Length: 201
Image (cartoon, rainbow, N blue to C red):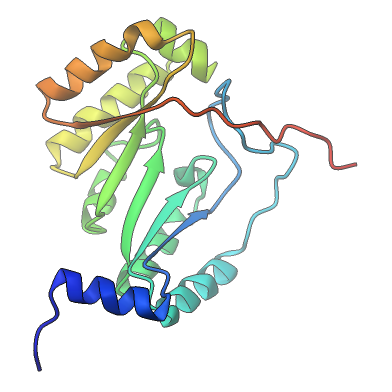
């Protein structure tokens, strides 16, 4: 059997309209309170572990190759690793969008074992003052920077993402230079979206 090239695979997937990748907000919970966040904090229910596994199996059957887990903060879910490991054993690649504050020495080995395709870490400033002006949580800058050091130490593939706003645009180039120094990809985002902070009553 002839081995498919990347282009052949893309053509085959496009012809069948297969979901090459998917993004799942596995929780609405977050340990930060970022001023630009669009999540609806009035909704606190989330899918059960069995519902999540069912979705993953459906995506697998449809031909999905990669799932990006986001939130909220995906690591806020106590069963996050069970969900991610289920995707992995079913042959689906994993990406994660995280604020990094819950990445620590206790779970970094489990993240490494998942062979994650890429992790996106949100960093809003090069100083605690600016970063925490946006996250509204004291100590969050140090936790995120500690996570970046751990990810580098354990050689996990990751990049830095920064939402650019009036309050942090002067630090954007400094973040970019930090990324260049550490050979990290830098993803600035200038598109703000309306929040869902509305009552459902």
